[in-house]
Image (spheres, rainbow, N blue to C red):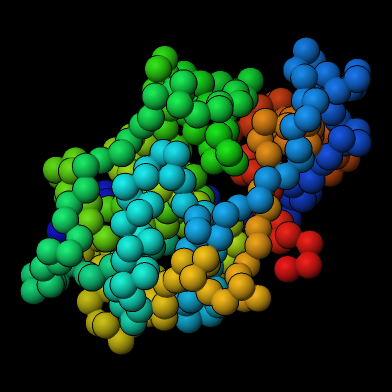
Length: 307
């Protein structure tokens, strides 16, 4: 049975705080720039945005709308390839989000019943929990973290780093593969984080992507009861369907979504971090400390112009 330990810790916002800053070069809380250099960092020739390859985008149709996920080949190439394969096989079409725990995860795939089908076409995958630090371009945050000696971003993905290893974090919107107790037992059972970041899962399940758009549709999926069979919804009629899953590159060209992610190496993202770290809005009674949790600083995403 492929599942995760349930987390029941929830955080509920009772009122509306100021919106997250969306700052570019002109953000008032950002350090001054001197000829392309800010705080000793040279952002010359680094673009503000990078295009997302349609080959790296999963298009998941749900009951309430479409969700788009960017795959992270640089961290989990075999798991990303498995998701493309299963999507292209039509494996997920008509299956279900059958295990859903409020504030934790939604999980989908073939199900966990004792008579769940055997899938020889999808053999178990070796875990891909971390990569060599020198194989990716890491941009550090200055903020301390409870789960990693250092946190930051790689290509828009929130990551941790410790010595010669770098790994993706379990943030809101993270997509990862569920598994049995055996580290190398994942196949096609995926989950998406829908609550406060369960960071204790870092380097324990293979993260292979994050939601770019449509998180509201994931949050709309009907919940199970965490106290009953670890959130598995017993009655199939109460489960939300996975209507379909496709790779964006396989859609007709004029239907392919085109996304851009803020380049986390660049000036615009540096300024956005500075604005989130230094909250001076008059709404605050007490000024928050100048700290950002890595999962609270996702790289902004936008549709490419003309899309």
